Amino acid sequence: MKNIQSPFSISIALTAAVLLSSCGKQEAVGDVPSSDELAKQADAASKAIRDEEAAASAEGAPVVDSAEMTSYANALRGFSIMVPKNWAIDEAASDDNGQVFNDADSKATLTAGWIENREDADLTAAVKTLEEAGEGMTGDYVNENEYRASGFIEEGSKTAQRILRKPDGTMIRAIVTYPADSAEAVDPLAQQILDSLTLQ
View 1 (cartoon, rainbow, N blue to C red):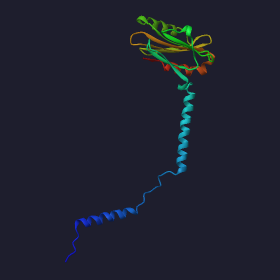
View 2: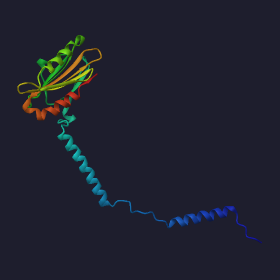
View 3: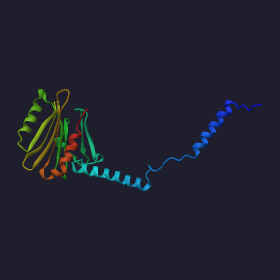
View 4: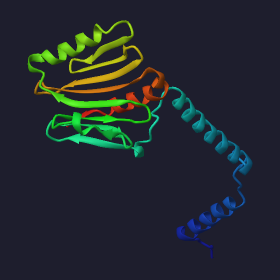
């Protein structure tokens, strides 16, 4: 009598053979870096990040951490701007339209406020004054609703300004003025402050 194996037993035998043959296989591990190589790569990545941060600082990155800034928001006129926490409000020069802040250390002053700008008269006058301030002043329209300028306004003084025209035609003007001899420290800070001006 012939010994006939069922298809089921044949499939079990084949599965067992495949499993047994794979047990002896070993994958190549030559491409896996050693712990020393991983540590060197981590050190290199960390150094690259530090170098990028140093380069950013050298190129005029913000000199004040955002934690050292506070927001001045004018809900009535619809704008906000970041101001260093240690800058004091000049109550006598401030009103519902805006505020003036002074820094006792650098002698810098920030004026941020709303202007009616009827038929663009105030914007036109402000731009004309800045453009006629001399060769030490540079300014230009960023777009039809934004004008920026910076430079020397008089002997020993610098300014950086940003003007935003609102959809209703009124405008918000932020001006940072400071002694020219503190420009190295204040220039990037003034840029940071003006960049934070936002319409609400």
